Amino acid sequence: MFKKLIITCDEATAICDKNQYGEATISELIKLNIHFIKCRICALYTKQNIRMTKIYKGHSKSCKQITHCMSSKDKENLKKTMEESSI
Image 1 (tube, rainbow, N blue to C red):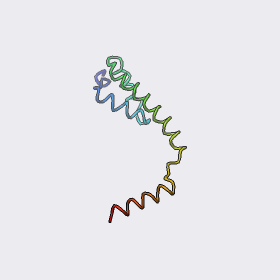
Image 2 (spheres, one colour):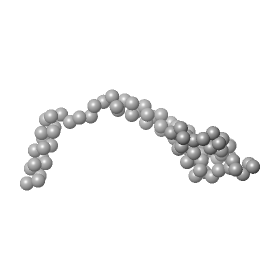
Image 3 (spheres, one colour):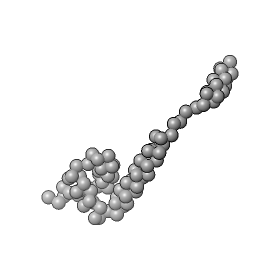
Image 4 (cartoon, rainbow, N blue to C red):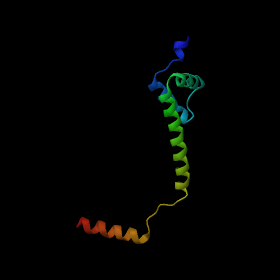
């Protein structure tokens, strides 16, 4: 019975990635936590993965508030450069 709860490190990282997007099932999370008891590397991977996700989400929120557009002058200069290089 307990053999069903033991997973490899590859399976643990896959479950960690699924959990990041809220797609992991309860049984997968139980298996993952049991795996953490014997594998500190996977526990560290999960911790770092969560931290990177939080950083990225924070950056993406601030990035969405900024409009990234070229000015009309820059557009005209780009057009001229493209026309000159195609001749």
